[in-house]
Length: 125
Image 1 (cartoon, helix red, strand yellow):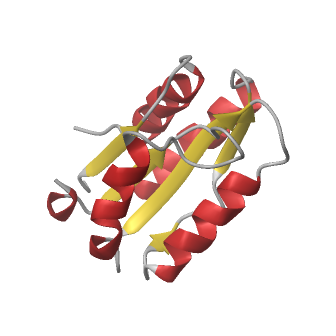
Image 2 (cartoon, rainbow, N blue to C red):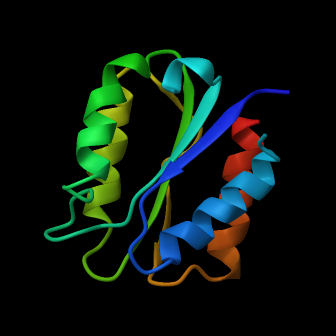
């Protein structure tokens, strides 16, 4: 079984709920230690990753993602998901193997979004 990490930031609990579903799908037990990583962060401000904690962490591991299976997910409350498209492009440029185009939920994840999160976890495992 692959070692899968789920790394996320959540202010309201929406992205946390998605992270729990990803972990459930992966049945998961430092970046270099993992075969696959799921990153979760909601859209913040003008559709960007959370800037104080998540962005600096992600920037610090970006160069280590080449060849790793990764998935990205998060919730948003406004806009059309541009932050996810930008994040996907960023991940593609690292050489990481993205398992999907990113799972998004508008505010609290509904059952369909949670099923997508479980599928993401399964794909990573």
